[in-house]
Amino acid sequence: RAKRPRGGGRQLEAGMRGILITCNMNERKCVGEAYSLLGEYGDLLYGPEQFSDHEERLSGSDREEEDKDDVEAALKKEVGQIRASTEQKLRRFQSVESGANNVVFIRTQGIEPENLVHHILKDMHTTKKKKTRVILRMLPISGTCKAFMEDMKKYTETFFEPWFKAPNKGTFQIVYKARNNSHMSREEVIKELAGIVGSLNPENKVDLNNPQYTVVVEIIKTVCCLSVVRDYVLFRKYNLQEVVKSNKEDAQQKSSLTEEQNSEVVKAETKEEEKSSKEVKEENK
Image (tube, rainbow, N blue to C red):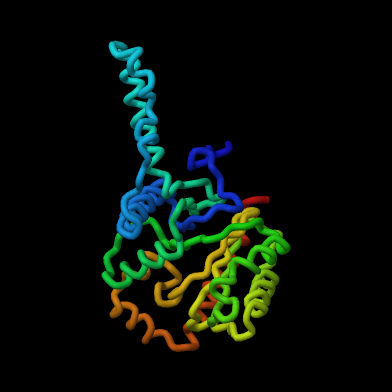
């Protein structure tokens, strides 16, 4: 039985910008948490959303004169107003169907996803105040293109410029995840994109321990979502549950893990990711 798409039938497609959010099981609750969190910080950073007079009157006021006494029309008008105002409220942030389980995509309009998400994580990292229950990771997506190698190469040549084109430069790593997609090769994508970063400025160097920039590549079906983020290691891979843990908890975890164990953990995580993508492939057969 086909599931009705969430997000009113809107689907993630190339050309959108937004925020990719992973959660455990409860996607509806995740969308609710996302709207609440993004709304709170969006208002702080960009001020409350503004709607024009025309939109405020969107609810059929032209007909008012004709059917003053008509109760039904009055009711209709009220419903129209409520609907118009809720639609407007979703304009800055709009949930769309992501195309993968346990992934929510919030399309953004007129804001910089990277700045907003970095601001949220920085605040949570500082205050250690837990603000969400079901959201795991929150990744800004400031560009999307079709998930085919040629499209990705062409797109990233321009997309990477603000960070990596001389005189700009930085140390970087590329993190890659694909869901419901079996035609892309992780190794090929990482190799090609690293090559593009290198060609923009030979001084850009790979650093897998603590890079200035992390290039996030998230592929879902035939859409490639991209961003370049700062503080990926400090903010625990942009995980909202991990970033609020106290430094003491962190220190304890760290001290009990030697370098060797650390690399084992990374290997295990990678294995886990590979396993889960295998499982997804099996599901889709």
